Length: 168
Image (cartoon, rainbow, N blue to C red):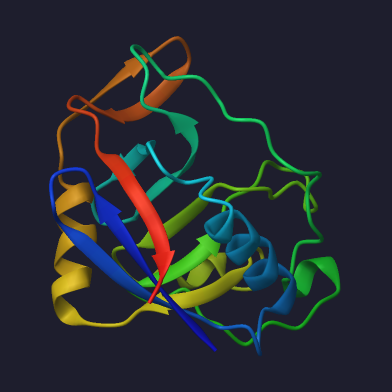
């Protein structure tokens, strides 16, 4: 079992339980990037009120930021991809982001800020926010005003920078 802290540049943080038992592929992948310091100075690049916040792939550079290099994608741990995963997408769930290709997840993750049961069986949940204060930070991020740029939507007007993600 592992817990991590997502520390933001503004001093706020979110503590998250990583469920290595129920989502071992996703948890191992995420923790590998955590242990290598990959997430330092990345941003939450997509935020949608009442849905989720997404981060973990782009650097804190002007515009839509540069995408960081990753290891090859992992197997998607969800029912429609042939893997049972009991983790439900409730408020506070952390899950792997992916493209329409089921085995395309690398570093990007999202945190649900509302129940998203329609994602169950389609996305790999791999943990959950631990406490109410951390959940309040996630909701605060989702409520930030946004803009679109070069085909990307829901980008916070003011960058929300992940200072680091570390095990706690």
